[in-house]
Length: 266
Image 1 (cartoon, helix red, strand yellow):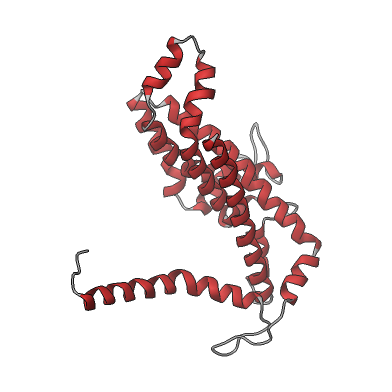
Image 2 (cartoon, one colour):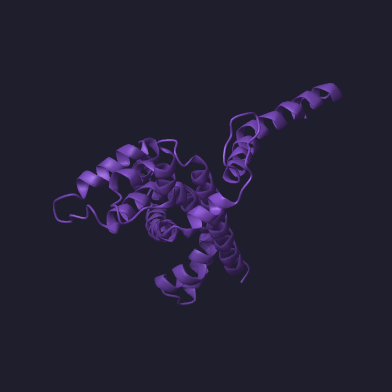
């Protein structure tokens, strides 16, 4: 460690702990406490209750928003993994194509999500695919946003592939499709797992682009939370719904990790 004195290390550890508490523990702790409160006029909340969760759980819209969020995350993640894996493998031995794809897949990250949502809205409001007002335009917007997150780790995984194993399989008579299914994709599973986790987390929490394209019949949890809290009327019920969103996101990520980890071990 660069700081060798005991007092210096103490100061570094203390500053690090304060930064972690300020940036991570405190915001989520306040959100969690607010979800179990009815008011917050002083330093501490008052009116401890579970009624916020009871209220949002009894609303028929809550189940629909949870379903919409999960479906949007799963579909967009699956499509993004297929597109990103195909692109990364296509650019594997084509450096010029790789540079073009790197720039292309960087655009959704470099451009604000509100601009991405507006671009998708304009592109699919008329022309050969008028999808405005349907679920499909939401899925397209989510896929555009998350595919760039999938491309980077998958590209790194492709760069670490061992060509000798694929060449040996080809020498034994395996077809390209079989090599992809039995050799290439199993080696890419750790990268696919990381990419899938990023995509799910991004899609589950996406708000801005969804506001631009989502029809009234397809509201995700972030949209519902925004509608609760935008006018400051249902803040604590919105906090409860945010806790539900975090719990569902963590649950989906854990299931995804267990499934992919099991396949890796297999």
